[in-house]
Image (tube, rainbow, N blue to C red; front, side, top):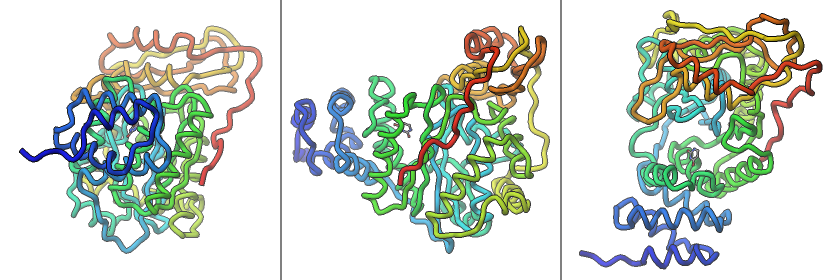
Length: 426
Ligand code: URA
């Protein structure tokens, strides 16, 4: 058996005592963990030491590189500039669905390798799988071909991308070390850089429905993400956006697809349109394309690209979407103004109705979710419907109602409207 160059115990001690890890220590520990030489308990101790003592930008960038090097990287051969978007996750966040075809219709190539939902935030693949026939799994050749012909691909990440991150993320999940800025930033960026897009816009969500509840935390994460991206030679921008209220009026899977189609056909809720156009403008600017996304959205070209994107992956863009067997309406109990609708409460309620999964291997109900009939600032009268809860399993309704308890308020005066686009970090 060959002897290892370094020892896990020394690497853990270095970080435990508050020192920087050297490049060599980082490279070795990630590689040895991927090979199974460093044990889970040792990596857990190191993750906790990083959680407690942090990492500087150079250490986080090296950790990102080591996780990229643990697997394959996509070298996309496409004629157009490639640009991607990543959201840190929110409630009703279906923006990838209208955004990818819009940016492609403006002339860029958008390789959007996405995930499934876990917990109260939804997953893009779960939403798209509510379209009859649509297929998430594509080979690298299929991704390249679709980027050439359609310009946009939304599909599952290939298995071999950043395997060290997969292992480490699963470990962090069970050792209470998820919420560490250098660990989150290196985890996200290792996958995004391995995917090969030359430019990247990060939508860093802030508020109750997001990972980062406070603006200060979200700003630190955004700065770490941009710092890592730049040190890897990518054009990266992070936009801080509000996630204290759900985005749009649909939270779930099939209903979020339907709302995205409304946006692509020139309608849809104003906040979804505003965020889609803002992210598209930033992506196009990074890609060096001067086309106006608002004009392309209005022209119907983005909708045509959506239809081609869905068809290319076996889906029927005109097929009816699934509908839930049971609908429960939550009504206003008094007259007034809806002052508040909490994103986290709505996300958890939709998840309990069956729109999300508790364990990776669970199936989602494509038709489950929530339709929001009143948003903060709307005047309501007693008996008016506020929310529709959709599910195939009516037994789930009481626990969804528990999640919504205290999650909305009717008062006398509207609160100041929230600002959706909070800041941009370049
Ligand atoms: N998303 C990721 O991919 N990794 C994290 O650590 C957190 C969110």
